[in-house]
Image (cartoon, rainbow, N blue to C red):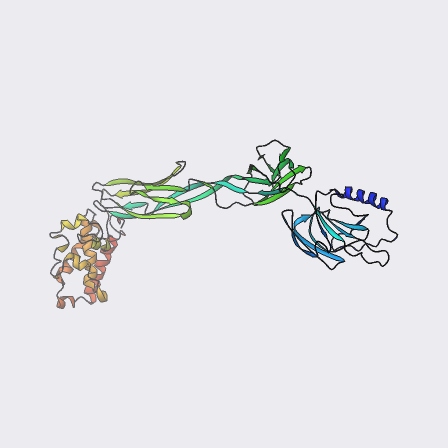
Length: 492
């Protein structure tokens, strides 16, 4: 019942009753009372339902069912307090010949108040003793809504391949281990944001149908979602029955929003609304979230999913040997294919290999000591050109070429310093590297090593000018082995 109607009715009733000579309202906590002549009921005043308690015959207070909830009230016989879990439109407090009407409009309903009383007794200025209390109420439809979100996340992948070498100089028969890394990573783009759900409309009125005139659903700030209820409006929703509607709408982005459903009615059962939060979490659909990664030289590397990215695959690839001199290109391509759309990507690392035709290239003692038949690096068959390979005796030292090469020159032992440089230079010559730039030093080194070939007494004579001769000869040979002179250095 509207406030305008109640006030109009009040004026009429007061005029009929002639009013009071003295009127001193003492309002409740929340609203001021309106004096109503005689003994009005909720029905008299236009409300649909009323719950009445005669004091003290029927009740002196307590908690009672009302509507879809409960109402609790208490009194000292003059003043009354109440609270409710169900919205109350008005309260009539009767005492003396008339009644006080407490109307909760706005906000149209209340869930509690205190200090209510009957009209003021003009003889003493105090409220008349309490005669009865009546709670006026009606029903509104109960609206409950859900808000389910969905969106699509599309992954875009990149692949990057690198090697630790891009140019190599190799002698014929030489191999070189190149280390590669293949890294894949992903970024994403979100799209297709949607909110959808149900709107449940329940008519709690035990007697009257709810005339539903429309259902509107709005996502903040002003996005109207189409609603489908399967009925034609106005629709008469029977007492105690539920109408379930659905809605769905696209959104411009994944921002947090609110979603409010509003049900309008006409007649005795009021409308209602409900609001749900629109929050986006994890994507409901993912596109290309995983890829298979492969490599032209090692085949399938593995499957990578976005949750684990970035991922790096590491491996080594032996380049060579080349028996014929010339320039070679080693192309090594890594690629991927995505699991949903079949999107692909690739990256190539290229190594240029030069195998010199004129003069070859030189290698250091460190290369030759690890590339014999004893390893640990791949075998270089240049060693086989010695009479017994790596086991060939080294002059009269009692050691093999391999053993001498692995003997550290403790204390700056000049014999082993020269021996290491000589072995590398000699093997370089066998391997095809031009030794013309060190021919004199190579022959002189052989003479020195043969003369002082391990005899302790002979070795003890490697000092002074002799030692200087050993060291200087080793220096020139090392210059050759490292590519500072001669044909140049091979990659190691």
